[in-house]
Amino acid sequence: MKKLNLLSASLLALVLTFNANAQTSDSDNISATATVVGAISVTPVDALDFGSILSSETPAIAATDANSGSATITAEDGQVVNVTVTFPTTLTGSSGSLTLGTFDVNVDNDGAVRAGSADLTGEAITGTNSEIYDGTYTASGTTATIFVGAAITTNSGVAGVDYSGNVSVAVDYN
Image 1 (tube, rainbow, N blue to C red):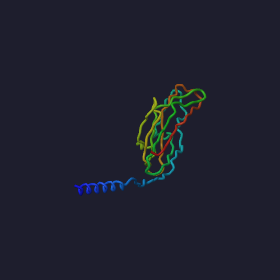
Image 2 (cartoon, rainbow, N blue to C red):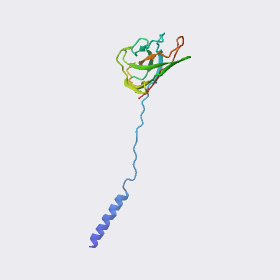
Image 3 (tube, rainbow, N blue to C red):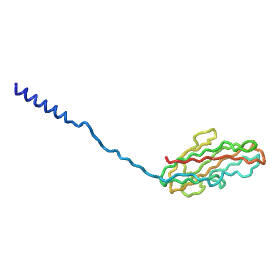
Image 4 (tube, rainbow, N blue to C red):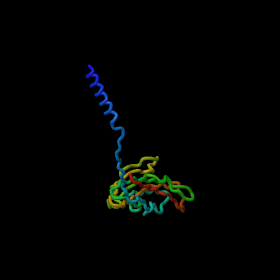
C-alpha cells in the first residue's frame, strides 16, 4: 500500500509540475494594409440652361438633352463612386421664384455621351419632388460625365427677370 501511495504521490507531483509549466501567454501579428487610390473630383461643364421662356411655358429638359447641365467626375478606374445630386426646388430672382421639379440624372461612364441609358445605379430617395438623387457607379476609366435635367414652372415668374439656382453634385468613394 505504501508503494501505491508513493506511486500516486509521484504521479500527482508530475501532473502538478506539468500544469505549472503550461503556456500562459501567446503573441501573433495582425497585418496592416492600405490601398492608395487617386483623388476624386467634380468639375462643372455646362449649366442647366432653360434659355429665354414665356411666362406661359413649362419647359422640361431631360438629362439626355443637348442643353442639360453637366459636370465631369474624375475617379480611380475600377472604384465604386457614390454620387449625390441635390436640385434646388426653386430658381430665385429679384422678383420672386420659379418652381423646379421633375428632376433627371444620368451618368455617362462608357463614352455614350448623353445616351438614354444611365450608368448610375440608384434612385430619387428624398424630398417631395425627389430633389435628391443618390446612387453609385463603378468607374470605367478615370472620367465620367454626369448630366442633369429638370422641368420649370413659370406661372409665378415676372418677365424681364433672371432666375437662378445651383445643382449640387457630391462624390466620394464607397
